[in-house]
Image (cartoon, rainbow, N blue to C red; front, side, top):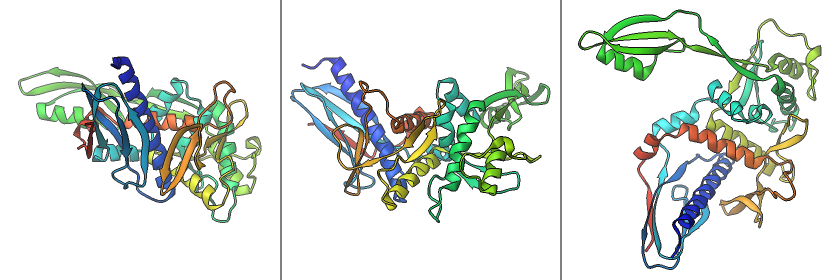
Length: 368
């Protein structure tokens, strides 16, 4: 008989492998201009039986049988698992992954130990210059083959990250108290009060009414991004390592455009698509500078089979993989696995239990 702990570990490994492979598969779909599809193993039930071993291949039933989610869930010695695969396609989930990442979410990751040098290239999709120009952080895919704008963004993040911070200050205003009907109180609690006020306390008043006290919300302030220097460098043609100190700053400040989960995936997919198209799969892919000044790879997917893959999948008949880290030799310059881990955490913030419960399972795999 197999111990309960072994069964739990087997499920855990299968869940993790399928999660990582779905992420890589979605990046490859975005590179091929195909729709994304999110799914997870939503419910697993096991019972004692008399089988000696079980092997279950997970197949992408939405895109067809050619794209295989490869982990084999092998639980032996009398365990019969029933597995349901849940597609995350509800309106609530779709809205959340299309919504730009908030400053509060960025601050959460910063306080959790994620470094700004790594986060900014993924989360900043572009800047709006003081003169109205939109500069997109789209990587190395200018139509003329130039990497000038991309190089300027890489340097922009290198210079901005040490000063980057997110702080809060009270929004001007004072607390206010008023009485409303119960149904109106429910609507206020559900829909909120806009960007400037939040609900402080709710108390019973006359029958059928509530006394609500609202107070000013906290205003989030992002500082340290040298937007004006980036805009001036691109305009002046100083594409490689522009000198921020020598740029005359405009009186009007620029703005930053933040990405959503979906646009981060498309950003990574675009990078892979251009590497394949240009025949530069051996190049290091998207890059960024670490705090110590090392040039690190943000994302790079390899093509072909690999015996040392941390994540592997097949897409349109071709194998793709991301190599694992050899802990004995130390970490190399490739941070692709860190990018996938960050995406997994970010998607988890968009997925609540209600979304999973309300999704209709599209396939149930029951061992015999």
